[in-house]
Length: 362
Image 1 (tube, rainbow, N blue to C red):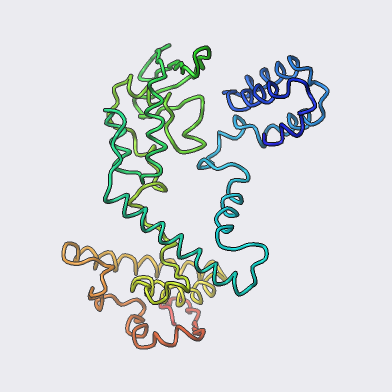
Image 2: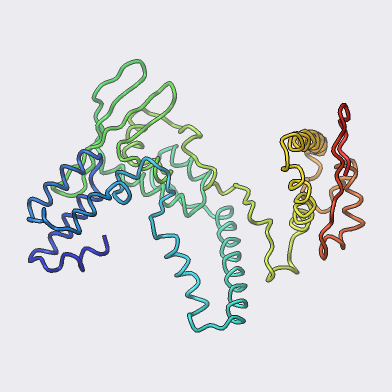
């Protein structure tokens, strides 16, 4: 779309061409309507013989939103990821930076990103963005989502004010609605929205939830019409929850080595020891099955211990007493030999169990 000015600026009405083409691309709500609108666009501006536009139409399935919105993209576009990373690193390095400068500035990048994430987490838990409406559904998202994602959701609640909902037909708890959205003083877009009261499922023709994971204003209008006070958990994605456990926080970087948490250190040691075991077990289905059984047993034992300790201390506290857990008799070895794990690779000798032998020799 950014290439439109350079590709079509030779036409007399290129500004109108750009505006109409953008409208066709972004406001066609079905594949059939896109095809019709595209053909009308070409005819109206006499562009049927334009090779660039003809090639674009042939490749429409890989760039036109309506052909892609059936898939989840989390709101990202094709070049957005690389562009955002370039923008981020451009604050710290240039093409003239030396290798030493790059390494130092890369560490600063990580430190800046971690600090920003800590501040964002603190804001999520200690400040609240007021709801824009009286909808209990909006309150539900307010409680669950991070501030950044809740702002996006809140924009859809505000957009409900421009929507008019009309029931077309209903049978056995399955209803079909037509939601008209006043885009401008002269444009009223219409969307088909279905609602299944039995499955508590709502689906809109615009496919905003399917592509971006956010309930659209049209679906919210129907839920309001149906007097639904709470949405199904399927519409609250864990990836945007402020309570989500981020696994990447276990990974340490050089700039925060002195500040690394005890839990992260334990995580590093466990990963280090597990790697050789997993590499060995993956050689065959039989060995993999043995390791899976061992994992199941260990997990059951740890969950039992954690359940007993619930209410007295957290499993992640440094002063937690975990001496009762025996993970292949390795807990004491991990404590006494931890210095070895930091500087050298530990080779484990495995014994393939003989027939009838259920033990795992380490």
